[in-house]
Amino acid sequence: MNRARRTPTGSRARMRSSRLWCAMLAPGLMLLCLGTACDEEAAGRAFRDAAASSVQTGLKSISDGIIDGLFAVVQLGDDGETSGDSSTTETTTGE
Image 1: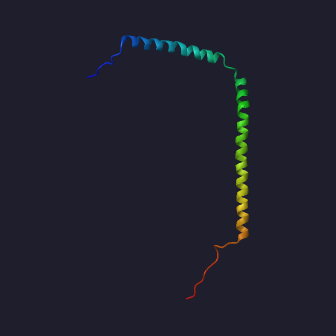
Image 2: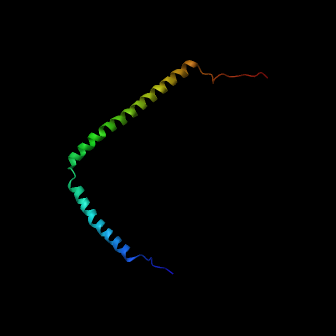
Image 3: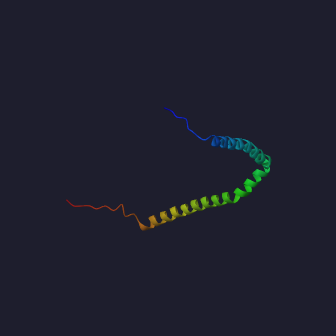
C-alpha cells in the first residue's frame, strides 16, 4: 500500500519555481565567477606570495626540530660515556 505523498498544489508550484530559479541562477553565477577570474600567471603569483611565508615557517620548524634532535642525541651519548657502564658488572657467588 504505497501512498503518494499529498502536498498542496501551491507548495508544488513553489518548489518548481524555486528549482527553476536555481537552475537559471547557477550557470549565471558560474559565468560571472569564471569571467572575472584572473589569468594563470597572476593566480600563480598571488598563490606564491600568500604561501611563501607559511612554507618558510614550516621548513624552519622542521629544520629546528632536526637540529634539536641531533643535539639531544649527542648530549645523551656524551652523558652515557662519562657515567660508566654499570650494566656489565658481574656478581659471582661461591659454591
